[in-house]
Structures are given as C-alpha cells and as structure tokens.
Length: 475
Ligand code: NAP
Image 1: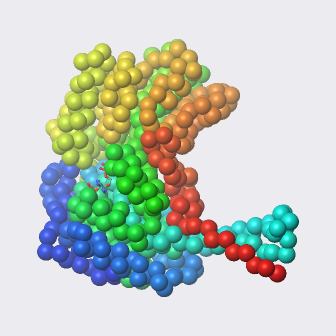
Image 2: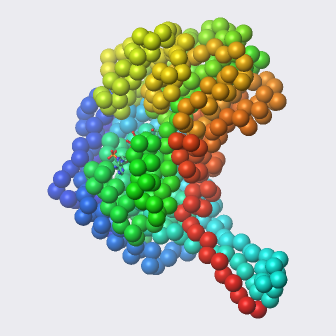
Image 3: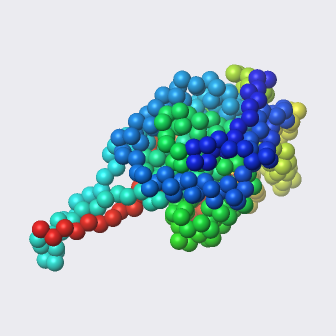
C-alpha cells in the first residue's frame, strides 16, 4: 500500500504553527499512520478568529480573489497525483474515486473564480412608488464577515473546497475545522491557497477536539456565519445554539431511486451498481433504497446482482478497487448490526451481508420493511435495499417516507412520469434516468427536511456568505 506519511502544522494568520500536541492520522484500511497534525484547542481558535478579522480589514478586490482562485485550480491540476493519494490514504477512498474528487475540486475553484468576478447587487426601481420618485436605489453585496467552516471526512478535499472557494469569492476570511480523521487534504489545500498568493489571515485551519473548537466558533460574535457539512445530529445542534448567526447546513440522506416498469432496466441496474457502493457507500447521496415496479422487479434484480458481485473489494491504493474500507471500526460495527437487524426482521440478503477481512462486502437486501434502520436511517455503508412496489404512488410515498430530503432519482421512459416524480418527490434535487448520486459542482446542491437548509455550488454559496446593503441616493 502506497503511503505519504507526512507531518503538518496548523495555519493561523499566515504562519504554520505547532502546539506541542499532535493528532495521529491513520489509514482506515491498514491502520498505519499516514500523517500527524498539530492539535489545536480554544486558544488557537481565538487566535485564528483574530487573524481572520484582521485580514478582512484590508479587503481583497474581486479581481485578486478571482486570480487566486484560478491559481489554486491550476495548482490542484499540477499536483493531482499527490492530492488524490492524500485523499485515498487518509479516507481509505479508492484511488479512482479520489482522482475524481481531486478533479472536481479544480472545477469548484474555477466556478468560484467566475462568481468572484460577477458578484454584484441590483437596481431597485425606486420610482415604482410615489415615495421613491427622485431617488436612485441599488444594493451592494457585502461579505458577511468571518466564516467558520466545518467539514466531514468523506470528501476531505472537495467539500472543503466548497467552503473555502465561495467564501474567498465572497470576500470572507475563513476559520476551517476539517474532520479529525481526514485533516491532511484540507491542510494540503491550505498550502496551495498560500502558494497561490492568499495573504495571511484569509484562511486559518485548525484540527482538534470538535466541541472545543466548535464552541469558540459558536460563541464568538465575530464569526458571522457557520457553514457545516456533516451529520444532522451535530448540524442542527449548532444551528440551535447560534440563533444570531447564519448557520448553513448540508446533512445526510437515505437516498431513494424509483425504477418504473417501462424504464431501461439494464441502464438503471448499471447506474445503481456503480452508485450504491462507491467509496463503500460513504457519500451523502449514495443510493440506498431502490423501489422497482413489480413487473420489472425480477428483470432488475437479475441485471443488478451480477454487476454488484463484479465490484472489486480491497485495498484503496489499488487502481482497480471499487469498494474499500469503512472509516472506522465503530461505523463498521454499526452497519453490520443494521444488516443483522434487517435479516432478523424478514429482509432477505441477495448478496453480501458479510465481511471480506475487515471490509464489508457490497450488500443488497430484498423485502426490507419501512421501519428498519436500513430503510429509514442513513446507512453510510455499502448496503442498499431493493423492494418491489405496485404503483408509482406507492414508490413516491415510500421514497418520501423518511425524515431526509437531499436527492432522489427516477428511471422511467415516460416524460409525464418523470415530471410527476420531479414535482412530488420532497427532495432538494431529483435526477431522471441518472443516479441521484450525481453531482456537478456548479449545481445548486442541498436538502430539505432534516437534510439541511442551504444550497452549495459556488453561485449559491456566495449568496449565503454575503448580505445585501441597500443604498438610496436622493437625486
Ligand atoms: P460528523 O460526525 O457530523 O462530523 C462533521 C464535522 O463536524 C467534523 O469536522 C467533526 O469534527 C465536526 N463536529 C463534530 N461534533 C462537533 C461539535 N460539537 N461542534 C462542532 N463541530 C463538530 O459527520 P461525518 O461522520 O464526518 O460525516 C458524515 C455525515 O456527513 C453524513 O451524515 C453525511 O450524509 C453528511 N454529509 C453531507 C453532505 C452534504 O453535502 N449534504 C456531504 C457529505 C457528507 P471531528 O471530526 O473532529 O469529530
């Protein structure tokens, strides 16, 4: 297994800082140490906020922000191999998926650079009211202030990029806390931002105890917005504790897909096999619940299972691997317990359901009841259910039947069916004849219900990180 053991310091006010304490970063596959990172606490967090606030006193003009963003995209391209290996080593993400993530981060920065140059307010038609006659009105888009960014382990580069790049495009300085299990990609990205010419203080990166760093970000009034991607349990608590801040949440899902009787079943099966198990299902839009109309059910299962069984399970550093490890032993045990709960409550294991060494084999469950954990909670593992339904109505009701609402999909040959599903599925995004795992980085991406309260994608995130100021001029 290829390793890039490295030691990284924190970034505060443009300085790479040691604290005397270190956090070890271990490969989820081999357990070997892949790096160690200086450990921050409350004091470093306050210093980082001081630095961010100081940086914003000298605003960077839009063209400079855009130039830096473009340069970061270029550096990500130049150091693609190193970036992809860092993601793979620390997250256990198969190298081919890590390469896709590394390329997507370039796209995120490129789109953010475009948005930086376009950021503008709008004219207000003042003379539309009698009171406004003789006045000129327009809005300015002002950066909201210092942004606290908190990111999860599963896309340790591109989800950090979705926080940093729009914030810089908006003219905001950032204090970033990446996931403790995967801080190396974030610190590598910070190095690239610095190399791209980002002045001191605009980006500060802290790794350490989540509640200690999180508490300071929540309590310090200078932090005006928190942008969080991770679990609902943590995210909604942060929002409750910071009613005066903008707390923007990108959370989980229990992703459903509907396959109607008239759909191209082969295409649906191929898309599901590729998207229910990629990165061992540890994506917030990994396909989890498949509902197939009864007359197509057997055909679908016959086309689906061989494709699932053909997936290569193994070492994430192997270019051929499709399914690697789960992030840690606790998560693995939880997923296995949920499979067991399903099995003992009437679900049939069509394939998988067991382990290959430490790895969970891709698992497909049939006849899973709606109250089972695998049907109503987010599995975040290489597990999906395939249930037969009698009608589109039933499929939509089941798809909508959880507390989540990030993305959903439908495979169908009829435009009327597709459009009905698009209107009735209660999700932030609906894909048609494409797996709901699909995301391109310019899309407005985000959830409804428990899945979140915002949209990411640079053009949308930049709105969340700026506020409108009205200017009225008497002529
Ligand atoms: P998590 O446990 O909620 O952790 C996410 C981040 O929050 C980590 O940086 C974590 O730090 C931090 N954190 C934990 N407790 C905190 C606290 N009290 N105060 C402040 N920060 C705190 O989530 P995860 O396991 O890393 O990620 C998986 C989840 O993310 C899944 O639910 C998935 O669906 C969701 N997700 C959503 C999207 C989306 O765009 N909608 C994308 C990817 C993932 P530590 O690492 O130090 O604990």
